[in-house]
Structure formats: C-alpha cells, structure tokens
Image 1: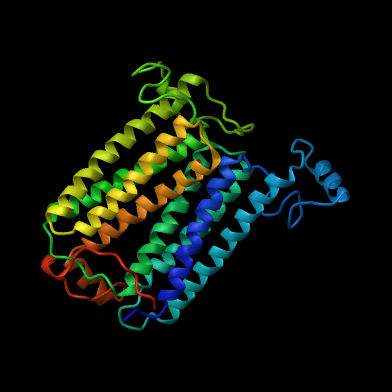
Image 2: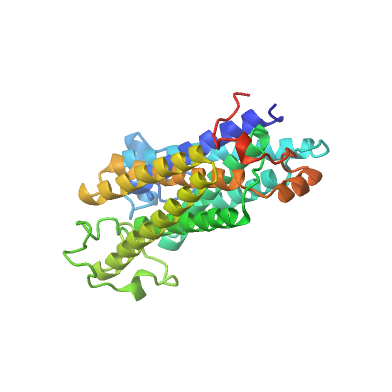
Length: 357
C-alpha cells in the first residue's frame, strides 16, 4: 500500500522531467538569453508582443534585440520551473505536517526545497552572468539532481521495493556506476555550455585523427573570467575539441562500467533490472552517435538529454533496490523510508513497476 503523498511526489517527478527537457530545448535553441533580465522578460511578466512594448524593451536593453520566439522558449521554461518549485514547496509543507507519522520522509522533501531554491538562483545567474559555462553546467546538474531526488522520494513513498539481500560488492559497483553517470552528465553540460558538441564531426576519429590537437588547459579552465557574453562560446577549436574528446572517453568509461554492472545484476538473478539498464544505455549511445553523425539536429540533441535523464534514473533505481537492509531499518526508525524487510533474490525478479496509487 502506498504512503500518503505518493501521488504528489509522482506528479512532481513527472513535472521535473518536463522542466529538464524544456531547459535542454532552451539551451539548444540558444534561447538562454531570450530574456536578458530575470525573473521577467525585458521588464515585463511575459515576452513583449506589441510594437509599443518591444520598442520600450529595446530602449531598456539596447544590446539585446527582442526575439519573440526565443523569449517564449525561455519564459515557458521559467513558468514550468516556477510551478515545480511550488509543488516541491507543497511536498515540504506536507512533510512537516506529517512529521509525527511513522515512516514518513522529512529530510528529503526539505532538502529538495533547499535545492530547488538554489536552482532558482542558478537560473538567475545563468542570465545575469551571460551564460557563464560554470553556472550553466551547475544549473544543468541541479536540474538532474532535483529530478533524481524526486524520483527517489517517489520510490520511497511507493512502499513497493524492499531491499534485496545481495553481496556488498554489487552495492559498491552500483554506487560507483552512479558516480560515473553523474560525472558524465557534468561533462555533457560542459560540452553544451561551451558549444563543443560539433567540435568533432566524424566517428570514431576526430578531425580524421585518433588523438587530434587539443587544449585541455583552456578547455577546462574553471576559473575563467566572467563575461561579457558566452552565447555561442568563446573557446578556440582546440579547447572545444579537448572538451568533446573528454566527453567521448567518459562515455566509453560509463559504458564499460554499466555493462559490468548489468552482467553482475544478471548473475545475481536481477535479469529485468539488467535488461532495463542495457536498454537505457543502448538508447543513449545511439543518440550520442547520432548527434555527431547528423551534426546535432535539435530533436536528437533534446532526446540525448532525455536519454541521459533516463539512464540516471535507471541507475538510481538500481541503487535503491540494492540498498542495505541496515540502512532501511535505521531510516524507518527515523521515519524517512520504508521499513520493509529485505527479501531473498529467489523471491524477486528485479522488476520495476510503480503502484497506480
């Protein structure tokens, strides 16, 4: 039986998926500065549409001519992100009201409220610092973190997945795989924020070479100065090539780690989890290759972001299923997780099916 708040958490998770995809679309259509101010747009609540408002907007921001389409891409993303913030606020209030009830999460909803507040700040800095790559990447990571933690909250409230009695080394492997996936998502954000996705347009080589000329020092110069404007990127070809190639090598490392994890899951009797992981990995590899081969078409690029989110959620699910029974018992005593007893693998196939509430 699901716990109170499950439907609300599930709705928040689905809304977070929409926000992540809208953020990707905004970034990939170069609409991050579609509105040069925050939280409004040229000083208005929405994008200025009339000739009078557009003339006033260009008087206020002469360096940023009004582009209506890009303005709406940015504002729709902000509207949905604002709605998600309100939903997470509701989850936090609900958690506080039910904090005396057994097995009800409290710390995670409150942490999510703090995280989404920080995300709003990163959204503001993305605009005010003119797409500074460090802030753009942090904003992307914050979005994926919010989605993952909402998914984790939903899993806990579903009361559907008791911990499994599995070897400790498999838990360690799953945790390591999760860290690698997070690192690869960070690299993907760095590729996107520095406009390095098309720095290499051939596969498996780059510029016809296995190890082309690369400038890692400038490509990963994390303390670079701020401004004046990073729209379109400021790095030279060798620096962007270094970023792109690092992302490719990271993808190779993640692939090998996840293949090993899938093999170990199958050996441990969790065939369905292994299959789910392999499917998510295969889709993401295919989308990544398509981005290079077809020179970053917008639908494929957005789908690649969605694939990254899907792969992250699958690995989060695996780690949740493999969590230590001792941690569950401790969390239950504090009222933050399910108190379900661990079950032997012979009674569980590793399937994933959320309750319908």
